[in-house]
Length: 194
Length: 290
Image 1: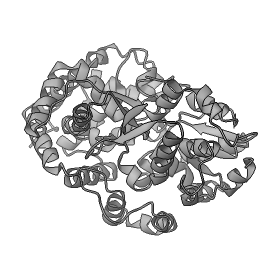
Image 2 (image 1 turned 90 degrees about the vertical axis):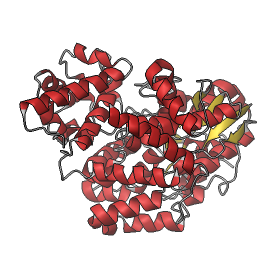
Image 3 (image 1 turned 30 degrees about the horizontal axis):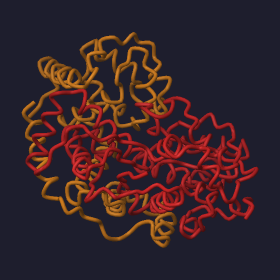
Image 4 (image 1 turned 180 degrees about the vertical axis):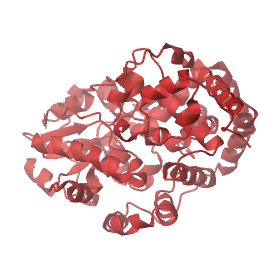
């Protein structure tokens, strides 16, 4: 079990984080953050975050990434890439948010009120099962298991989409499902090895 | 002009009108779109952000098939498919380790990829291969005086900015001008719609959609056009929820840019699936001279 509650555990988190970030093309630019705050100012959801993107880099420097992986910050990133294109140091901030999401799942320390990890999990299951996203299945499973309150709120919309033929009942499966299984199997083994 | 076409998962469901109208426009403009054989999910933001390496592999299977089919250009309509496939292609070219890992995984599935495919957005093909003059020449119904808010969304030109500016793109505005319409000043044109937050944290997404709708209303736009299934869905379908949350009364028609282009090219409303929109688009069609 991965452990975050000891200084050694936090150091290990930093080690894995840096190794993965340096693996991203241009990842070493993370050292160049000058704390200007352009990222936080550009972010459409930073006002809801426990810590804005600028603070993420400050925590990283202070050796306190454990605070970040437990925060709601990373789950509010919508991948709009504003921070990435505006960062004067050229830091690939969106990719770093992805890395932090993966670490939060690895350490199983994401905030339990966030529904985004569950959504991603259902999405991945769909792709691994069918090879494509099955939109009706994704929405139905997510709403029924995680947000039953939305069933009422979204009922009119769901009905409209359904009657206009924009939410087919059946999933479409690709012929190469076995290929996808083999591809993900080979790469999953590598990810664990890292 | 012949291209391989990547429809994307939404094209089979919520974004059927995008797919149908893009195919119809292509046909009318002499672009041949050949479907990528047995394509799979691009990898998508949801997959990418949780299992990076696997999603690169899944994404690269599409590129390998495109290469096997002898394709040079793989065209996507969905912003997210376009960005994810293009990003996989770029990282594959830049990162030798990733290159080797992906090919090891593809080999297990009996495929390989050598980086020979170019990923392109359908808009890029329209603007740079067909050309605006040619499109203007083929217009059958000029959209005279139609006020159009061009909503590009995030992943149209971010992060890579290959065919348009990442901050302030203009290609969609220029297309609207070429078919006789009047693109309104729309400073929020690349702001986020909230994406998947609409299902997981809808307050945040509704706030973003409210701004997109409010600016379009302020500019008296007759219609908002989009280039991404998630953008289109969020901005169009959730207007009743935005109205409830903000005490507004928006009923702004929203459609895909390919549907509006199709109208100008004289393609019938049924083929363009304009009858499948959630906010009725009759008012828009009524403004366009027959």
